Image (tube, rainbow, N blue to C red):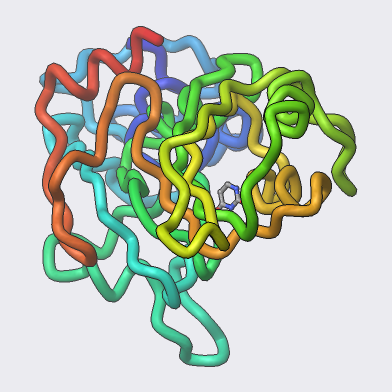
Amino acid sequence: MRLEKYIATSGIASRRAVKKRILAGAVSVNGEPILVPGYPIDIETDVVEFEGKRVEPLKDRIYLMLNKPAGCITTRSDQRGRPTVMDLVRDLSDTIYPVGRLDLETEGLLLFTNDGDFAYRLLHPSHEIEKTYIAWVKGVPRDAVIQQLRQGVRIPSGTTAPAKVSQLKISKDGHATALEVTIHEGKKRQVRMMFKAVGHPVIRLKRVQIGTLKLGHLPLGAYRLLTSEEVSELLSL
Ligand code: URA
């Protein structure tokens, strides 16, 4: 495996950042400084050091999904001491970090890993991985509004790409609607902004699927490890 990929996979930094650090002389293999990003690594036997620290062997990769509750922030630490998603996974590992983010008030499927290359591949906009949400919104959007959301609407960060939107149900009192929304972009607060733009603000938002991976019946606040099949399916998207 290429040196830069090996190090990025360990979760230390992105591939691009790793490459720069290799060129700057921050990496050694078996005690020898190596300045070539593509230097071949034997993952069974080579000892790689990044800025003087041993890079963990690859078998220690962790991939998990959390059912994030509303009210905790997606960050590794918060200066104001608010609850973070790390509080919910730290008993397993504190070297993992969230892949992307969900807003403070958004619930649902959040991935964690210590594999930088996995995170990079999932987050890179060119891969356009689909994410599906259940959005409960105020009022009952008309068909024309749903059509508008499907085609794209203007939000503060630009115009949204075509999305899949379907109505699931209307509340008994007729004041709210649940919809399933699938997008493949990651604009800031995108789903909330899309519904705000058409006059139906989001009341509650939950992510239920990323690519082929479904949240399923994982209890709120709980996590589970992904199977190796689930990891390879995500990487093959
Ligand atoms: N869209 C939002 O508005 N919020 C999220 O957390 C994710 C997608």
